[in-house]
Length: 190
Image (tube, rainbow, N blue to C red; front, side, top):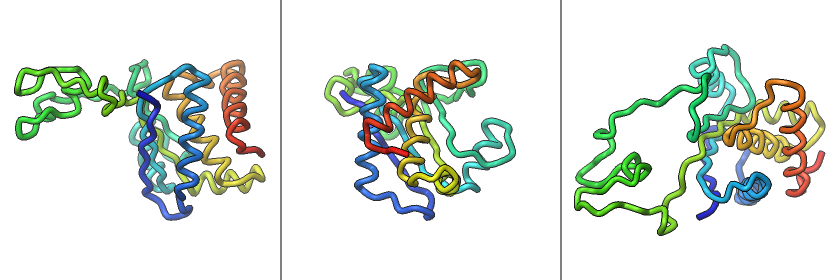
């Protein structure tokens, strides 16, 4: 078991290279080590301003684009939306769907499906969505590389997934200090 990054690119403002994906994986491992998170899956999607605006409006009620959104799968707080589904929707052709695997339910053959022990399944930590055009603008504003800005937003999103927030000055300082330490360890300097 380990931390695993699944990523998707739905924008064309910046080419996501294999080298940059390797850097994102490095950031994920460094952040996981710092926070003693040893396994789980993080889904990262790069989008444009139009899509992040739509998501920000739909899920947060804020009618403007933002730089990063995080949707944690591990905890439901007051402000989190609970996803409600029918488990029967996830059984296809007698095969177990993802929901059954999450709960370790027995399949149609009565044998419990335990992919986690085999190393084939990682518990989802959540989704991070990053607006690449917003990251490009911010990197120019702050005078550093787009890779550093995307890395910053990715680590910021990851820390949100595992429970960090920045609602007050003290929690913001703590969170931003952790982000900066991780970015420095990965060589993404200002």
